[in-house]
Length: 390
Image 1 (tube, rainbow, N blue to C red):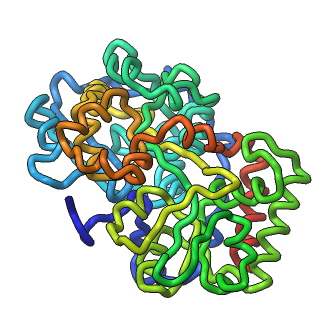
Image 2 (cartoon, helix red, strand yellow):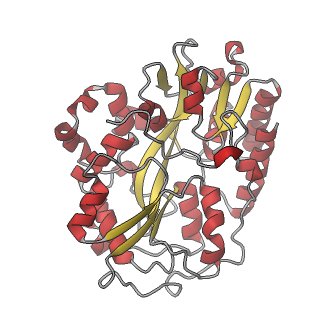
Image 3 (cartoon, rainbow, N blue to C red):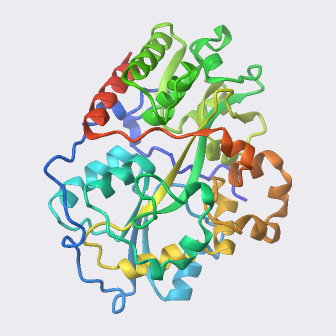
């Protein structure tokens, strides 16, 4: 197991412009639209050179690949003869969209064969025709071994265009050496001993999903009035000085150091920190759940190699080896049984096990954020930027 050298998939690598307790970058990013950029993936495609070119270019988030030699990636290269260029250049969904949207919208190559994006962004790209359909016959392990809870999202019900890489939960973390237990998101926003000592996430759907739940609304199906009430709830907490900052995953360092005492948090970040004082809590209101998905963009020249990659990582033994490193929800059936051979101590740690292989009770408490149309995405994004800026 690795120690402090591990990075979460949500690590924000933006140099000196982002400081430990500064406001997150979302408000500074343009709110991207896809109007006029729709494509037909059946015609905006390249010849597949996989048979003659044993190459694959993958873009993923940091902290999403095991590093103990031999790694699952090096084993894939040895098994298939495919040389992988594995780039960790996905640090934020909107930021990555900005990198590739002009090319995809103009039916031009992104020079990538695969990238990994969160549900809502994957849905957006599939909807405007920027993603190639997978050949089901070439990814049998995906359809045989994908866990039931991830099988049929409304934006890709047959998983024709996407394959979950990892999934995760959003809840609360606190430093038990600094503060008593925090049980709910409502407490996070109102408890006097937490005032000015908490952070929330820059990911709108996570944070505003909890704002919906605090007010008794369903994040998966809410009205405009529910949204407006949620925005006002967050603005009030900001005005009251309850929230110290909105951040990416740099909250882990601040939480461990005691600069903050509690925060909104992603499950794998807390597990990977390997700090006994940091506790991940499923809030009383429920948990937000998400997945990051493998996608093959238009004009990818090695789709066959990308499909071999997907099928390889949907083998239970391979998925278990990866899960033993990244600590997020494993999307592959049978991986828990394989973990018995790889790291039985992990399975004996009930709290950690439930972050990687959550039980039915935990999954029953999870909530998803409803799909948004283009107008809602733009308007809600501006509202959330106003919340963050205070």
